[in-house]
Amino acid sequence: MNSRKRTLATTVFAAALSLLTFANFGHAQSMDSKTCDCHKQTDTMSNQPSRAYINAYNVPSTGIALEGYSPVSYFTEGKAQKGSPKFTADYNGVTYHFTSAKQVAQFKANPAKYEPAYGGWCALGMAIEDKLPVDPTLYKIVDGKNYLFLKNAKIDALKIWNDKNESQLIKKADAYWAKVSG
Image (cartoon, rainbow, N blue to C red; front, side, top):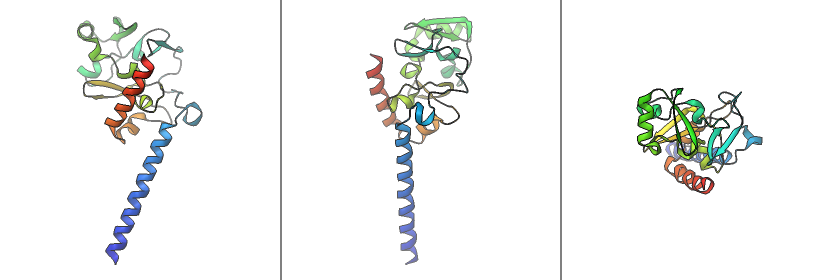
């Protein structure tokens, strides 16, 4: 009888945990500026110019993508590195900064390889059908694509992403990006 009670208790606990996880994801899916301040990027976006839509890309009105971080460094250095205005390249109407002339050459040889997924918008945001800003230091490379994520005082989108079914999120995000990017 004791083992039955333990099995029942374990089953109830697992069901409750699954329900809480599902409810949490449902909350993440309903994110908007009123419910979680997702659009307030106090850590990395304060004092930034207003956002602009250049071919649906997430860039400030200056046209400099990734807050000046090099799109190549994510792949070659395994980390986010600030680029320099001395080393730039344009792609699809967006200007990118790099750490060196070598990185500029790498980017120009294959810009689609280094361009961030979803125009630099938060990958989780795309999966829940919203354009959320990103912290360019919070990223994940999956199958050769650089996915960027929102992080502020209330939301760590990469943590939520990692706790969910990544392939399902990518499918949802891909579908929404196709719809909003034209």
